[in-house]
Amino acid sequence: MSLIALVSAKSDGVTTAATALALAGRRPVLLAELDMAGGSLRHGLLRDVTRGRQRERLDGHIGLHRLPQADWERASAEQDFTPQVAQHLWPIDESDFRVALPGLIDPRQAASLTSTWPTLLNILQLTDQQLGWDVLVDGGRMVLEGGHLHQVLSPAPVLREADLVLLVVRMTEESQALAYPMVRALQDDLAAQGSGARALGLLVLGEGYRPDDVARGLEAPVLASLPWEESAAAYLRTGGRMPRGVTRSQLMRAARDTMGPLREHADRRRLHLQMRSVRAASPAVERIVQQFGQRGVRHG
Image 1 (cartoon, rainbow, N blue to C red):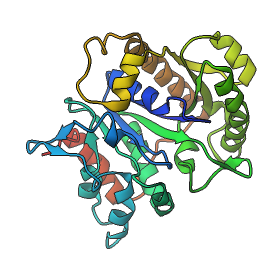
Image 2: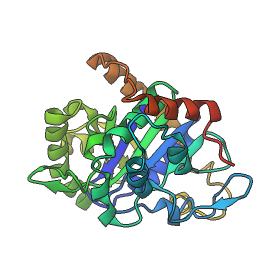
Image 3: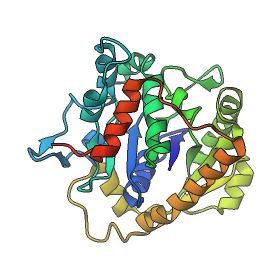
Image 4: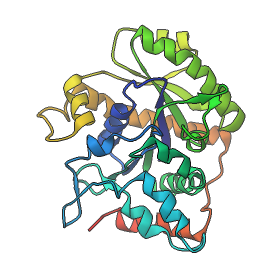
């Protein structure tokens, strides 16, 4: 029951970490791939995952890039948007409660999302707060403009309303050096336009430095730590047949142990901020979320 966004200053394993958390969680989860540079799930983890009784395969007609057109085609904001949204959610595995919204197929599509962000954000919040799902956002590599989040090339509206924003940092000197100015920029942006600088934390990947030292050096708390295990990480990146032992790997075991504390931290932040329950922006959005709950987002 949380909306958690993962981002990075460089390509530092955001998608790998996000998919590990999504697959390891024991609650229903929606993984939204909002990397404005383009998504990789459709060519990786989801490439061999079929949907429904017809065993439909994921193609370019499904995903985030299709939502602006579907939204625009509605006669009014009150028109039921449920069929269009549900069509663009794809199962992550064979369960009925882990789904993904595949990302853009072309970075040039990012600009088309400007008018769609409010509706999409509202759906993510309601899926979290009313249905009790975990919502994970793969925000990809952050792009700044004038020291602030780029309004087109980053999912800024979602990050500013997330319960937690986790900056993924590798346990290398290079990754930490690149992360330092990004921590400052994210803290400033979230303080000025979001839910506060304390929404930002670190998720460290791998070994080599003590988490306490990383937190002290970057001046931000380490809220999660995942070991880097190449065999499991390779499967999360590329999909295909799951190698033996992946579910018992150190990476996946750590991911299972991580979601609970992250969820609790998000809940404490909500209580501290006395956040009000999110209300649907329109009856159409309310119907979308109600149908998700009734159907468990089953397709076919």
